Length: 258
Image 1 (tube, one colour):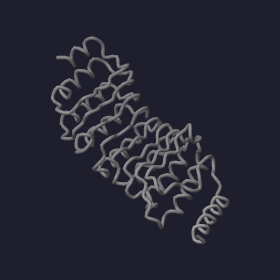
Image 2 (image 1 turned 120 degrees about the horizontal axis):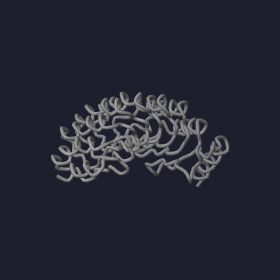
Image 3 (image 1 turned 60 degrees about the vertical axis):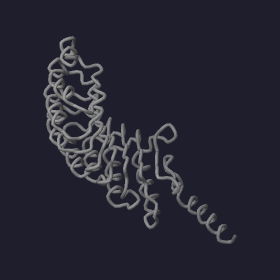
Image 4 (image 1 turned 180 degrees about the horizontal axis):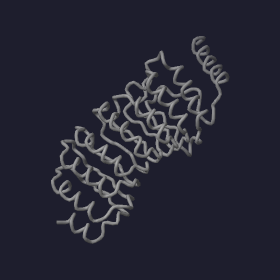
C-alpha cells in the first residue's frame, strides 16, 4: 500500500515539475504503443511542443516501452522542429521499433524533411510526410529512406511541391523496392515526364503495389495516361489508380480503357 502511494506521489510530483507545453503532456500512457498528437485533440504545438515531447520521451529511455505509431500531423514544426524530431528518432530507444510515422501538414519544408528522412528507423512500414512543401530537394532523402526501410509498405508524399525532376529521381527506388503497396504523389506537379518515369517503375517493380495516387497533378495530359496504360494493364496487383482532377481528356481515358 505504501509503495502504491509512493508511486502515485512520484507521478504527481513529476506532473508538477514538468507541465504540459502547448498541449504536449509530460507523461504518456506506457500501456499504449501509439502517440497521436494530432488536432483537434492537440493544438499545433510547434517547436516548444516538439522539445517537450523529446524531454518526455527521454524520461522513458530506461524503460521497456516502445512506440509503434507516432502521429504528429498539423504540428507546425517547421525546419527547427524537424531537427528536434530527427534527433529524437535517432537517439531515443522508445522509437527503435517504430512502424508508422505520420507527420503531415507540419510545415517542415525541405530542411525539416531532410533531417527527419535521414533519421527514420529502418522498422517503418508507413511513412506519411505529405503537405510539407519539401520540393524536389527532399527526393534524394526519400530515396535513401526507401533503401533503408526495406519493409515499407505505404509512402505518402502528397502535396509536397514535387516536380518532374523529383519524380524521375524517385522512380528507380520505387522500381527496386520489394514491399510497397501504396504510393501517394497526389497534389504535386510531376507532369507528363514525371508520370512516365513513375509508370515505368511501377511496370517493372516486383512489389505488390495496390494503390497509386496521382490526383491533383494539374499539369498532366493524355500523354500521362498513355504512359500509365502498360503499367495498369500489366499489373496483377494494382487496384486503385487515382487521376482525379488530371486533365487527361477523352484520349487519355481511352488509353487506359483499352
